[in-house]
Image (tube, rainbow, N blue to C red; front, side, top):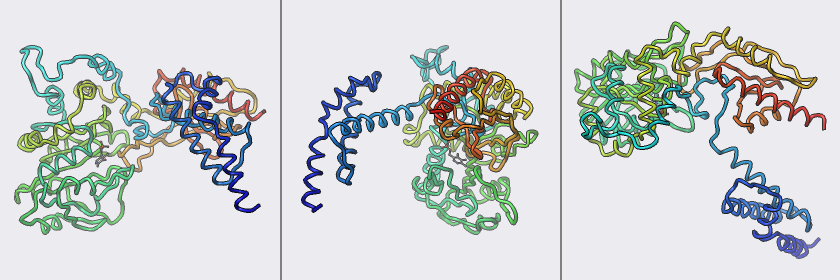
Length: 473
Ligand SMILES: *Cc1c(COP(=O)(O)O)cnc(C)c1O
C-alpha cells in the first residue's frame, strides 16, 4: 500500500469515530456508570476518544461496529480506574502494620468517635468555662507535654512539616550540621536533605556513612552554625563498623557552644517496647536527654492521625509559634480531636490494649493463629481450592523498626490464579489487600481487627467464587 493510500484509510477510520454525544448516548443506553455525574462521564469519553484516535494513527484499524465498542470499552476502563482511586476502607492482610499506602495507623475507636462528634461546630479556639478565646489545640498540647515531659509542644501537619518549620525557625540562612550516616530518604522519593535545604538552612555534612564522632560535630561548628540535627534511621539499619555519638553527648556539645539540637525521631514511640522484641528510641528519652526540639509523626508509633509533633524547650516552641509558616501548617479540628483522644489513651496507661496499632504490633503469634483458624472455619470453597494456615513474618513498616520481623500466621490460598484472586479481593467492598507468594495468596491476619473478620470471610468467599468460575469458563 502506498503511503497516500494508508493516509486515506486512516482518515476514513478517524472519521468513523463517534462524536462525544453519540458515545454518551451509547454509554447511557448501556447504563455504563449510573452513579457517575454526567460531566465526569463526558470527560472520560473525551479521553477515550483521544486514546482511540491515537491508536488509529498508530496503525490499528476498526470498522463501523467495533469502533463504538472500543470507545465504550476504553471508557469502562477509565471508570474502573477512577473507582480504584476512590478512598474506601481496606482490610490490611499485607502483614505490614504501619502501611503508608494504607494511611498508616488505624485510629482507635474513641478517636474515630471524637472526630465524628467534632465535625460540626466545636470549641477549637475557645474555653467553654470562661467563654474566652484560647490557643488552638491548647488541651492537646498540655496532654502531649505530660506525655513527653517537654516544656512545650507544637502540632503541625506531619513530621516533614515539623522538620521544615524547626529548621526555618532556628537556622534559615545559617548552617545545620548533620551526620552523613543520617541523610535519609523516607519513601515516595522524599529525601530529608532536600527538605532541610528547602527550609533555607545550609546543610553541613560531617562524618562518613558509617562513622561519625562527637569530634566531627565539634570541628564543624563555626560562626554561622545554628543547629545540629540528628535524624533517626527509621527505615533502615546499619550494622558492623558503625559509630554515632549518643544524643546526650550532642546535647552537651550544643549547650557549651550555644547551638540548638534538633532530634528528628520520625516514628515517635512513647513506650519502650523491647519486651516485645521491638526496638525503637522513645520520645520521652530524647526529651529527657535534653534535645531542644524532638520531632515525630502522629500517625506512626504514636498511633494517631497524620500530624507532626514538636516537643521541646519553651523558648524554641515559642519561636515556632512566631514563625508565619506555623499558620500555613496548622492542623484542623478533626485532627486535633483524634489526636486528643489518642493522647488520652497514652496517658491512661492502656495504650497497648486500646490503640489498634500497638495492639497489632504486640499481638502474639498464637493469637493471630487463632484468628486464622476462626476465619478458615467460615470459608466455603468449591473443590480444587486449598486453604491452610501457615506461619509467616509481619513487619512494623512505615518508617519504624527497620528489619524487625514479627512472627505471625496467615491463610494461604492456592489452586486458582493468584493474580485474579488478589484483584478480586482488591476491588471488593471493603477492599482486601494480601500478597502473592509462590503462586499462592497469603493473607496475614496480624493487622486485621476482630470486628473485621466476618467481612473478611465474605470478601474471600466472594473473590474465590469469582476466580474459580473464571477458571472453569
Ligand atoms: C517518617 C519520618 C519523617 C516524615 O514524617 P511524616 O509524618 O511522614 O511527614 C521524618 N523523619 C523521619 C526520621 C521519619 O521516620
